[in-house]
Image (spheres, rainbow, N blue to C red):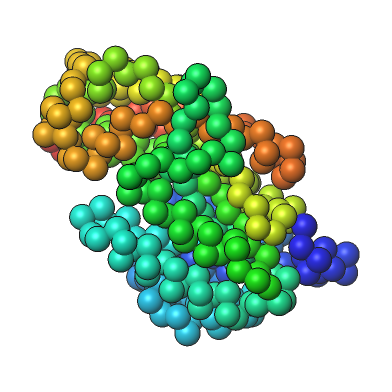
Length: 323
């Protein structure tokens, strides 16, 4: 825990959070949970629709985006803690430029809170870590995958957590954050199965992926604000035992389409090169550090159940009806 947060809590003062990406999928869950815990939230929003979503939860919307550095600096300076969730998810864009824009935004935040002790918790990803040869779970010290574009996102993480005078903390999210029928790579996969009339997995599908329920993600970000140690990263992971074949079969079941193995080359043609690459990663990242040091544990419904008979069943039905 940062000394700043500790002093605020000892005095019984209400913490005010500034959350970027607050009107997004994970951001709304974090905002809702923070308010339920008695904190106040000012959330970055790019549109009137986002404003209304935040207002409905009891948060105060702040108009801006990753390029409005003056807004980022002002809100960060006024807040007790900052949670940085905003990210450009346009996979057709130049990824290096996406990372550079994020680094510039984080720099603006950091300049406003330097030497204050206010925690800055940044969203990152655990897919960039090299898997262990024996298939065991990796920890936060795993070396980076070679020639893996998404690993470049860790430049943004390092930029936030390694700065002098900044209480920076990173939450490395699972490739598949799910729940509430929400957005993300799972929804993309379901949509692809509806479009193609089949659910695909690559080769034998034995690679595993890491998953995290969005409500567990929300609790983890708040735990990191309250208990996270500066310059540390924590894997945000609920399950590591889901194989890519398991996922394809669950999607096939909920969509009602056959399931088929394809080569990486056919996957790139059927999906896209990026999606094929993403769905051929072995990601088994341990949550041990977050459980032990942040007093957190995942509690959400398991991944396969949520796909087959949980929040994604009505989503799949809606997608099929629109086809």
